[in-house]
Length: 321
Image (tube, rainbow, N blue to C red):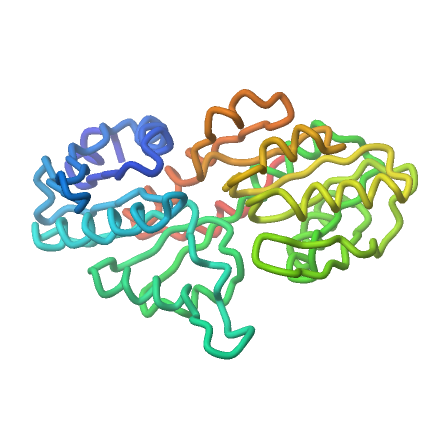
């Protein structure tokens, strides 16, 4: 489909969470980003006004629910309602980083399952499909009563690891929950596998306890989906070096990097932290020589095109070295 025909059938809008990523996605598709006013009234309430005609169009709303998570989530919900009431043919919420995903089950009495609540809010607002990347846990797809396309960062991360790190490689998961992801990477990279056994004392705080696996003399890549405060990551790097690793790097899809995270990365023994642009980097992170950002824009652009054309997106999981 040529750009003119695509532009006649698709409308892409964004809020204030990831405007640069949205622009890059539109650049890959060869169509302009739709006009939308997303701001606030003087009392802080969110104001949305869609500037383009969306009647009968396939509408994609690009918005990560990254910090400030509550504000960005409300922007997304209100944008969905706006295009629904403007008679869009289909509404796809493109959520590169799905926030609130870490509260995905009851781990203690009287706690919410916030990932399910947010899924219900998005569906109720009027979204008919979800497109996201590296959900914290796969079962979140089942929280939605609408189709969910969960892309993976591996087609971007694995070639980077292959090109930039040595062959004598060990992939380490910083917790038990990330082992399936780490195992999949290790298999594709023909690398060995390790696991950090940790004890979490409170949300956002963890103490690395032990390393399972052999890292002596190895090049190590710690693999995770989210780097938030950086506590787990930097403590894991220290444990790995103590066990004789040659050097330690990290690959994390979503760079939340809240609080002291950037300074922790700077002070840590990590050689490099590789992240994607699902969340915009703050000024401190952009100025950190250890942090490398890869773009997922072409991955989302291809997914948007395939969804619009009713094609399979399974080809997007293929990895080319």
